[in-house]
Image (cartoon, rainbow, N blue to C red; front, side, top):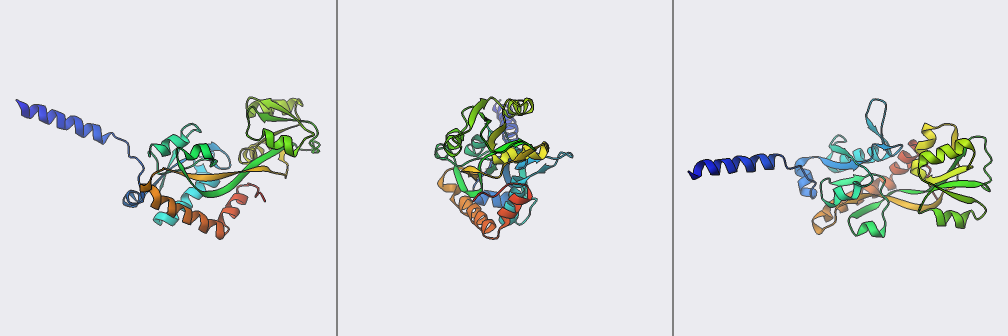
Length: 255
């Protein structure tokens, strides 16, 4: 009587475990898999986006592949998991991916949840205007509501008037109608905007600095992985690879 029940339970547990997702792990587990699972953006040109053929491209995609090459010996030893901004930290914290290279700024509040590598790019705030438009920055500049850059711009450009906008699309509409003279936002976002909208130009000055870093899980068991990732970042920085790749994708290098 008990044997059929035991067999049924065995089947249930077998089916259950077969459907458990493959989670990220420490360095030894990554080596056994021979694969890095990395969360990336797929809608943020030029960091990570899909081209016309649907292929992932961008600065962070190149970095992920180079990381796989350095750590596992093959650029193709990487599985990309496209994520939203809301998912980036949670997937790493839950160890559902090994890493995230997804336009994440390292800051104190986020360090309570995850760890970060050394920076691979220093983001900042820039301003775009329509080509042929005055660039003396004495007019009205749009900026996202509650942007972290508001205080920085007020200090650096005391003569401008900042107007809060709800979205990048709204900013574009206001610039097209002439209601604002320009728009301030993250360099990494505005570069992609200019690449897709050639009637606009990015002004050369960058304000502030926000380090973009690789997101790693917290915990002593991940220390070896963190060490190896940082060794790669230092190597790529010393060789000039990070600088060259950033410039290839049109990203300005802040001083």
